Image 1 (tube, rainbow, N blue to C red):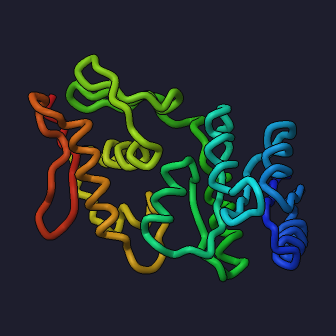
Image 2 (cartoon, helix red, strand yellow; image 1 turned 120 degrees about the vertical axis):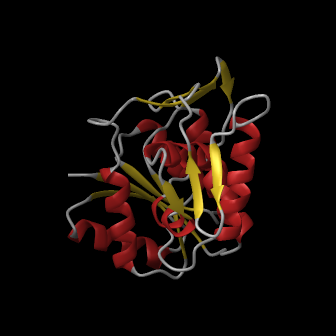
Length: 225
């Protein structure tokens, strides 16, 4: 039985989520403030956290950043009433694994939570390589030509996706679906921004350019070795 922590200050929503998840077979612990949620997350054992960003006192974003700084590695699904691209980027860069914009359908929350819980490194490669680029999936460490490259969480996920599809073209819709978990409108402008940022870090001259733009289609990471 998966154990889930829900941190949400709206009482009715909190009760509804708890009841719904328990009916689906989850063990659920709840918290109504950021401080309470942080306490549970750092003192208990959970398989996933559902975290509202707009919390009284300690915000959900602060809780998320502090948890990741402490090495909390379990998936975090954030809930937010804000749908602006910059708010999504800020939350994902702070360590969130996925997000839902309020109001949302409970069925979608369940689907996203199941997807997060299925993510596991067991049985997968621990290292990905292309040319002189090496990625340690367990340590989340990226090295290019012997030099470590610092990436944000989202940049790392995007690079991992490109490496897993090495030498194949991936469309923006594929990236939106599989990395951003978008099911409706693909955030193509955000994807393009992240690709540009990733190139500046991974393909910095004089290194050979690995990340290619396939005009009118998407992107590809080419292995030149």
